Image (cartoon, rainbow, N blue to C red; front, side, top):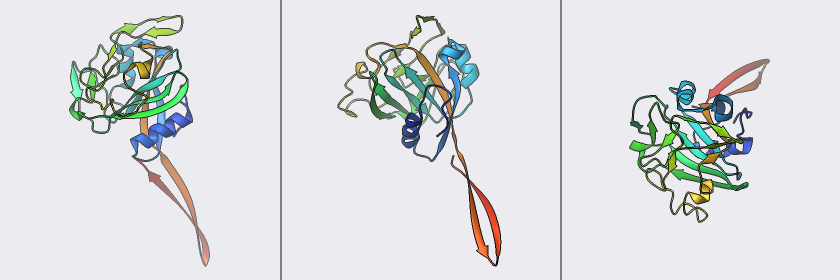
Length: 209
């Protein structure tokens, strides 16, 4: 977990950390649509070759959802990247906590990279956030991407509350914010005091990848 820099809260980070399930994590904000502009070029400049990332979308209705990948984004034209650890997720729906993990089922098509598109997950584009540049209007980005149910990710029969994308994004790809966080292992230092005739203090540092 890390102190939030963007909109992602401690509880959300804890949930994502548990879903990733490889130990404590630090979340570092790389890209924000409101801060950096909703541009595929800027997204790739800030997020390519960064390793594991989590993409989070926030909409005007208070729904929060996105995707995680353990692999790097890149600017190659039309390439899929294999990732057995990837997943789509939902954190809130219409302002209320609704936490669901949708696992990858076709890992060869976990993420899709191209220099003209924003974060994109799955064949048939389970989540294709946007292409080129999207301008903000009255605090909202009307993303020009698309979504598809299932595809490379198991979305049906995962939660009784989610029967289609309407139960995740309220029927539209309109967002007030889109963020990408770098996900890294967290360094934890522990001091152990040993008493044996004399006082010795040893410091051990553990790294969780």
